[in-house]
Image 1 (cartoon, rainbow, N blue to C red):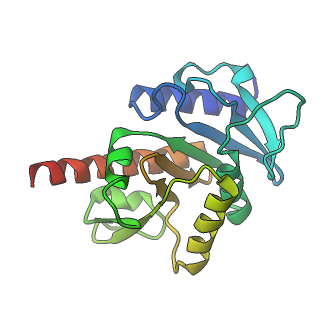
Image 2: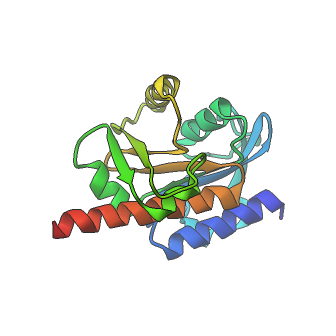
Length: 200
């Protein structure tokens, strides 16, 4: 089993323990080379991954072995890797907090004053704010990726994560540990936001 496959399997189990990838939700990937990524096969439970559940695709999402079927959202992983050469791993999950908060309207969620903001580039202190983009869900993945890419081009600073309304979260990092750290930080802050709104 390759190191990339082992990292994806371990990340899937960790995300499953937190309830971030229920049923067949979510997908995970690792960059193998400038033009090749390892990604979870479509339809499997991410907490029960086996080596054969991880396949290889190019940056256009084309599987490298006949018969392999990548996730329908592979194009969103590829979009991240194409746009950010430093990205080494991408995680997509479907937590309760992400799903609920993304359905409340607006094209972004602002997170301010959290200690865990320090998990993001250029933020050495909690005394900061990030704007986490929220995109409308779209089954046309190229069109959704075009909307995401346009927001990246317009942004002065890109937060390494975004939400899809009523659907899930995408987070990336230089490697799997960095991506997991950012996912965990965002999930914690979003859970806090949801709780705060519930008791307000």
